[in-house]
Image: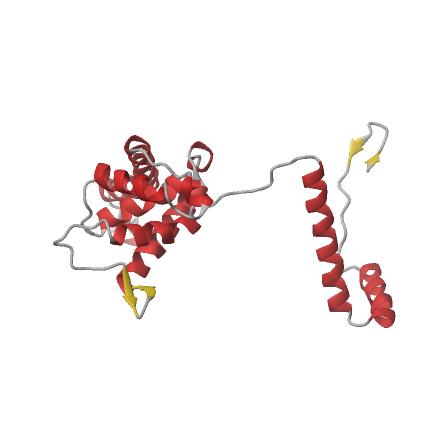
Length: 222
């Protein structure tokens, strides 16, 4: 709504703890049942209308996150490890796959890296699937999980994914240069975060010792 002589827009707000708001839902609850269920219904109705409005104005509200791709890359990289690597990311028992304790640790760390990437400009520079692949490649390296060469497993991924039944993954074509670029930016980001703490320690060590307290007046007179 617009108010004032200069017609500045002021946002319309509602205080859900206000007396009028509570009285309104109390009156509705008396005639329609639970106030909580009615309030939830109203909220869902508003959200539904907002989604319809965004669709009507052709506003793309879809956000693709790298987290969902991490699990798929974990399963793939378990088959792209070197023969001398004895650890597994995934175990199959009676036709069912489950992640090992080591695999869960890799996935959890990759998710944390993905969170950091999404809070940086990486999220607007690269596809979510590419960020997920770079996070998995980096965490496998830091944990010493021995994979075949980067170029080899990328080629293997591109060949296998072309025949995938899920359209979401069919279009994920990886390139070595892109993964290396994302990994380098992640490392630069972590180095920048650690730099202030590392710079503070030498400064603290080089600081002069505090001056001794002044002698009392009587001692000075003596």
